[in-house]
Image 1: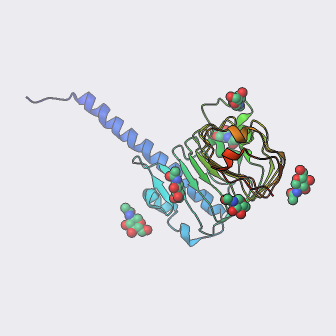
Image 2: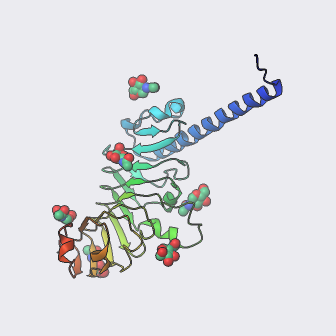
Image 3: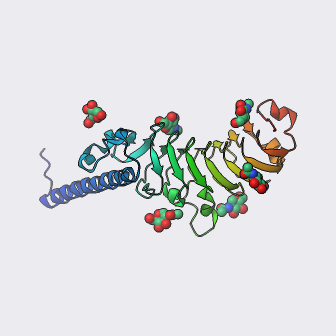
Length: 256
Ligand SMILES: *[C@@H]1O[C@H](CO)[C@@H](O)[C@H](O)[C@H]1NC(C)=O
Ligand SMILES: *[C@@H]1O[C@H](CO)[C@@H](O)[C@H](O)[C@H]1NC(C)=O
Ligand SMILES: *[C@@H]1O[C@H](CO)[C@@H](O)[C@H](O)[C@H]1NC(C)=O
Ligand SMILES: *[C@@H]1O[C@H](CO)[C@@H](O)[C@H](O)[C@H]1NC(C)=O
Ligand SMILES: *[C@@H]1O[C@H](CO)[C@@H](O)[C@H](O)[C@H]1NC(C)=O
Ligand SMILES: *[C@@H]1O[C@H](CO)[C@@H](O)[C@H](O)[C@H]1NC(C)=O
């Protein structure tokens, strides 16, 4: 039996489809434009030739870019491309679905902008082997003005900021990022004591590398009782104290 769709419904449906399409197109365009804006702030690189406003339709095929099935950017991977510039023009608010940002092994310099907190879907962040300086901006997440369930990096599982020139105390830096499994902060200039509750709110932590910084004081007792920590490297600091022997079986603790 023939089934007739009321014309008004059909119209509504067509309208729905076309607005969906324009929403998707707007999103693509917003993401592509943000990438081009950032590209234009960097030293010219042929690696980014496909990143162009005349090529927005191919955003998901731009070098280093991966999208989801809706055409929204989920991964930016620019590992080791000799890119030179700052993160200040990076459109941190423009990528609602970005879960993997890998900018390791380039010549990025300057601070990590606090706006990075707007990457709400970020799970994997690798900014290691660059020339980034200043403090880690994540303290700003914990000032209380921002509702905890939005606008923060709580999905973050892996963060590697190793081999930069970051400074500052570690206090509260990454506490309460409860999904963190891997933390790499080696070869920077973090100083001061390791707060005793530093690991308390990181129940998922497997790996933490704080080697080659300027940390001092006692190794917090919590390091001995953390349930699943497998690897900890504190060498190249000015720390005192020891990890418990059974713990060392599963970890690598080297002092001085
Ligand atoms: C993606 O770009 C490559 C070259 O960079 C090209 O060979 C390929 O056809 C493009 N794929 C699509 C789907 O546009
Ligand atoms: C993130 O991207 C990098 C570079 O492509 C890759 O090595 C890494 O496995 C990715 N991580 C996840 C969790 O997808
Ligand atoms: C995050 O994005 C919002 C909206 O664009 C903006 O108002 C806020 O300042 C951003 N956060 C930071 C820390 O810049
Ligand atoms: C971090 O976690 C601790 C312990 O659960 C809690 O007391 C504190 O309020 C949390 N901080 C923020 C900013 O949510
Ligand atoms: C190490 O930290 C101390 C303060 O705790 C500071 O006085 C000293 O200059 C730092 N050294 C380096 C090499 O950053
Ligand atoms: C600990 O870190 C130091 C300095 O980064 C490195 O040389 C050493 O190999 C690391 N130790 C282990 C057991 O991974």
